[in-house]
Structure formats: C-alpha cells, structure tokens
Length: 265
Image 1 (cartoon, rainbow, N blue to C red):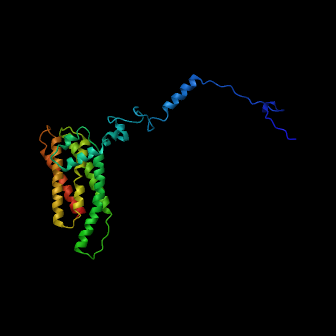
Image 2: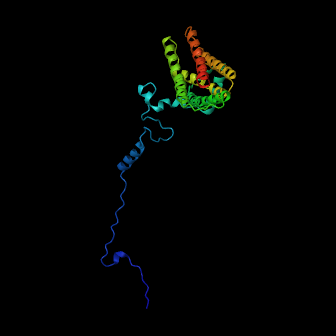
Image 3: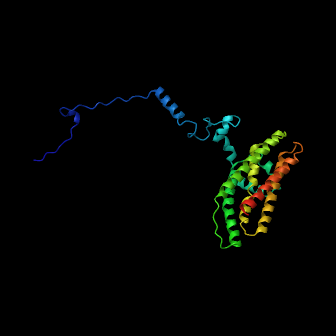
C-alpha cells in the first residue's frame, strides 16, 4: 500500500546537526566613515573621473609655474573654441581689412593654426605632385612620371617651421625693442595667415604658368598685407617699428614665392 511521504525538518533527523545561524552584525560607525572616505579619494584626481563642478587639483599646473609647460592641462584654454569662432577667424584672415589681432585679444586659440598648418602640409605635398604631373604631361606626354614623396617632408618642414619659428623670432625682437605682446597671439595670427594658401594650392594645379604666377602673387600680397596690418596693430604705442613690420611682410611674401617655385614649378 502506498503511503504518502511527509517532509520533516532536517534538524529532527537522527545524526543531523543544526546549522549555525550567525547573529546580524551591526555596522560600525567608524568602518562606514572609513569606507566612505576611501570612496571619496578613489579614483585619484590626477587623471581619474571627477563629478562635474569639482575642482581638478591633481597634477594640474598653472602657466606661471615652469612645470605647467609640461602639463597638457595648461594648453586646454587655447583649444577651447567652437566651429563658429574658427570659421569667423578664417574669414577674417582672408579679408585683411578687419582688425584680426584685436579680435583674438581675449581668446587666442591654437586649434585653428594647428589644423590649418597640418592640412596645408598634405595639400602642398599632394597637389604639388598633381601639378607637376599635369605640367609634364602637357609638355612631354610620353615621359614617365614618378610621385615625389619628399614633398611631404619639405612641406612639413617649411609650414611647421615657418608657423613656429617666425612668430617666436618676432616675439623676442618685440620684447627686445620694448613692445609688450603675447607669443600665443602671434602664433595664432601667423597660423591663420596660412589659410589663404589652401585654396591657392587648389588653383595652382591649373597647368598654365602665367595663371599660376598671377594666383600666387595675389594670394601672397593678401597674406602679407594681413600680417603687416595686424603686426602694426600689435605694436601701436611702441615707437617706430616700421622696419619690423616691413620685414614681416617680406617674409610672408617670400613664403608664397617659395610655395610656387618649389611645389608648383
């Protein structure tokens, strides 16, 4: 006869040992405070996540301290620009009659000059080879043509070297002559002055020698006039610095001629 089985607690079985149930331990106030303190200091402030609104006091150095030159956070303000500001400054660099130097007085940036210089390097190297190919095929159609990869090295050296060294040299000369100016503003102004050579390099691909010279003379004149006007505005009230302004104009025009002769011969 089948009998139903009833469940019995295991504690009543023969040989069974009741399970030990630990008493609930109340959290200690000191341990809670210590854990909360550990959560507050982790992750570390130097590079870790921080909630919005909290000050960043890790390894950030101010620009007045010499260690600030080796900290990325010191350069953040010079890249804090949006697209509208960069476009407006590019338009101002193409139209040299505007007071560009006073426009960037409150917030000079390095994003625009860095982007312009890098783009110009690739455009000169690529379009320079393209222009050489078109001119060669026009004069000697059966001649073999090879891509000159050295254009990249030359373009990088010329553009980056000019955009960095020339403003720095003028900054030290202005300091020596008693004129107070900002190196960042000079870098910003000279960097934006190179933008006009980007559309110019596109037009220089046209395989017509006279037209190429006309284009480079117009763009070089506009860029030189832009630099001289803004450098003159920068040195107002510092005495007669006409020779310095003229030398900046000549250097900018010489850069335009070098671009034409070397990359679009």
